[in-house]
Length: 212
Image (cartoon, rainbow, N blue to C red; front, top):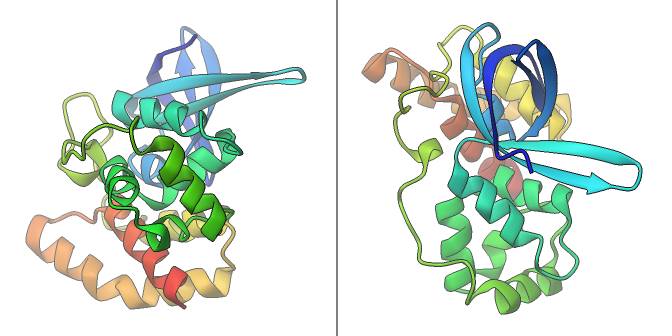
């Protein structure tokens, strides 16, 4: 198993990145929140999980080991494959996934594309005793740690957020609507810290679009 990759970010796309490791470019599938922290040309470390199929080898990348472990645990539930597990983490950070399962919050889990009421109830039933306690120790909820890619500066936040939303299946018009609604939030972040936290804006955009 490839547990992590560290190296220069060679490319970033709406659904993943290419990280150069020992002269080899590894394609890594990532959630939009993780992608938002990556900058081409910078060094980054991603926790990874290798999914082996008869006709493919797919490497999934995560902001930290906790997110990777939750990704793998989600797949132990009936009917949950890597794509759906990644979709769960694209909508909710690990802390929120644990809270939703432990509190039987069906509506929160139904915000994930591909999970209906019965699917959410099944996840809660099968994973409630295995996910562990809710924690606030997640990199995507807090400031960057040493070795992690920095929060994106203000200039590209609109393009990155739009690409992430379109990559998750929303239309360009829907993405533009979310960007317009969140512009004041981005301005407030810029005024307060001098930076725009794209991962935070992405979660807020998904909540807005989920209610529309």
